[in-house]
Every structure is written in C-alpha cells, then in structure tokens.
Image 1 (cartoon, rainbow, N blue to C red):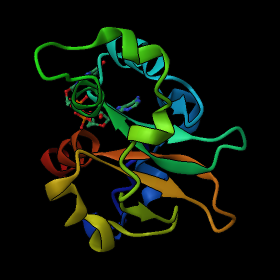
Image 2: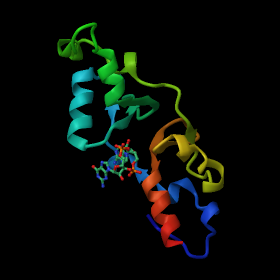
Image 3: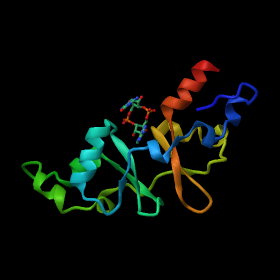
Image 4: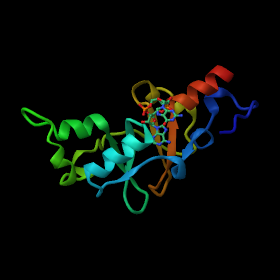
Length: 141
Ligand code: 4BW
C-alpha cells in the first residue's frame, strides 16, 4: 500500500489500498465445502471471496455459512461437506467497487462489511480493501 501525503484521505482510490488478487485467499464456486473450510481454516480468515475459473467474482463464503449448511437437527453433519458446492451456500449479495472508486464513495460500506471486493470494468476481480488497511491509514493520517 502506498500512502501519498498529497492526496486527501477521502480521495484515496481503492486500487491504491487494495490487497491484490494474488494475495487474497479465495475459493472457486465449484469447489466443495470441505475445500472451502480447509482454505478458511488454513488462512485464518472467517470469510473469503468466491471466484470462477476466469477470476470473476461470484460472492463470499464464510465459516458460519458453511456451519449453517451442515447443521442437522441433532448434530453437525460433517459428511455433507464433500457433497455441497460453495455456489449453493455462498452469499451472492455483496457490495462491489471499481478500482478507481474513492474512499469517499465506499467508506460507509466498511461499517457493515469487513472487506469490500474490487471488480474492474470487464467484471474481473482485482482484490479487496479491508477495514484494517483503511483504519491503519486513518491512524497515520
Ligand atoms: O491471517 C491473518 N493475518 C493477519 N495479518 N490478520 C488477520 C488474519 N486473520 C484475521 N486477522 C485480523 C485482521 O485484522 O482479524 C481481522 C478480522 O478478520 P476476518 O475478516 O474476520 O477474517 C482482520 O481484519 P482485516 O485485515 O480488516 O480483514 C477484514 C476481513 O477481510 C477479514 C477477512 O474476511 C478478509 N480478508 C482480509 N485479508 C484477506 C481476507 N480475505 C482473504 N485474503 C486475505 N488476504
């Protein structure tokens, strides 16, 4: 992340605060829940983006969503992890911003969402802006 002192805080573009795709833990929509739980557990994050094979954003998957999907009446049905696909369970209703969006335009989204996904004009996922990066910037500002 590069913080340009000349730029006003609220004018910071998403692309300048972004954690790029190659450093974002993610899964693919056709992966099963077992794989998703493995990636979530190994990465240490509670929610991560869901992409397709062309790096287009489809939603996000989280540990609570997975747990809810395998919760039976009397027990957690872990054997279901293998047969359910991420796309059946993921949250598709997520905010998306453009690389050139300014903090002024998306700061309010970080109130309810720990991270915001960045999508370019062609619809491809480029990375995320996290609450941490923005708060870190604010404390330095
Ligand atoms: O593995 C971790 N490394 C670091 N450096 N910090 C972590 C890690 N796991 C959690 N944290 C901290 C961060 O401050 O706990 C916060 C909440 O994590 P979360 O939500 O509930 O897993 C983290 O805050 P954040 O950096 O502002 O990140 C907000 C959310 O963005 C995370 C996670 O859902 C997502 N995220 C962040 N970096 C990511 C990522 N998802 C995929 N790949 C990444 N590299």
